Amino acid sequence: MTGTTLDDYTDRYARRMRGMTASEIRALFAVASRPEVVSLAGGAPYVAALPLDAVGEMLGKLATDHGPTTLQYGIGQGTLELRERICEVMALSGIDVGCGASPEDVVVTVGGQQALDLVARIFLDPGDVVLAEGPTYVGALGVFQAAQAQVVHVPMDGDGIVPEALEQAIVEVARSGRRAKFLYTIPTFQNPAGVTLTEERRERVLDICERAGLLVVEDDPYGQLSFDGDAPAPLRSRRRDGVFYLSTFSKTFAPGMRVGWILAPHAVREKLVIASEAQILCPSAYAQAAIATYLATMPWREQLKAYREIYRERRDALLDALAGLMPAGTTWTEPKGGLFVWATLPEGLDAKAMMPRAIAARVAYVPGTGFYADGTGAGHMRLNFSFPPPERIREGVRRLAGVMEQELAM
Ligand code: PMP
Image 1: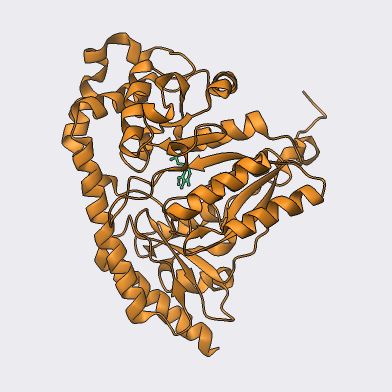
Image 2: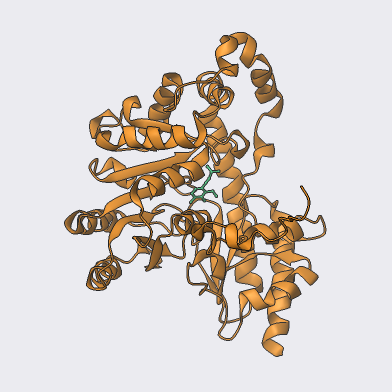
């Protein structure tokens, strides 16, 4: 072709792309992954703690042991074998047959991320409101933005989402003539705040949502990574109607597998499968066989314990370092599980503006602004403790404290 060039695509993009910008966090990871930088920015599980030789051997034999089905297309909902195993995993947290959990109502997804996207796809029209904790998971914000939904944040305190604030947000959204479709919540070891919704509040939050006719999307990647005794039982174990339970093998096994799931109310399961088939046809047969075999033949409960112990030690290292080194006026959460601590900076410090100085001092974190739909949160930062070993965590906090002291002196 002559005379035509396609060098400008800007007026061709779909409207939904307008709000979609590169995630601050992903841009950060490129810099933060340089070896001289102590990265407290990531969210990666410490997969080196897996028995890599044994996992390798298991993977090597998958196709021969399970036959060609591991290399074939499968059904959109995911294999029955894996859905049964998923039910065993959920039963450990109290989501069992007693509360209506069944392989029939499980949809296997490509990580928890696709699970979120599916829920958004089947429920959200442009302009719909999603209520979500403030701060919330950055990947969920991306999904809701792609669905052209509006996120209304509900504040948390050390006990999780504040029920009175939730009630108020519901009233305000209704008063503004908009429609809130669901509450998106990470009640246990929240990302990024590291807080857990208390037992008492779990009941209240469920009651409030039920009264308001609001669905609950419970995202629970971290519930099984508890360090100090069991976490409160998931919302889904208390209520079966109107609650969608999302989880993933990313944090309990390996994110490279990209396998997660949704336990959906029975009436909705079929819609999720249809939406998933339109998106991906079916989840990877190979990855599903790998997870099912891992759960059937390897000591996965022991592995979970190993992850917990490693992360507990790293959490302690981070909390000790913060207590010993942070400038006065800094506060932080003390998570009982999961991967993250949320720190609040002394008055006047801006975590986003400080980032280039922190990188120059060879330490990285995620500024709080990434976790709010409206870009607020600059007075906070998320610190990860799952990936760096304890001595690197201490060194990272030492560098960070130095940068903060300098900023305060400016
Ligand atoms: N939800 C939350 C709260 C998360 O933190 C993550 C991963 N960081 C996910 C969902 C998605 O995880 P994945 O797609 O790896 O399963």
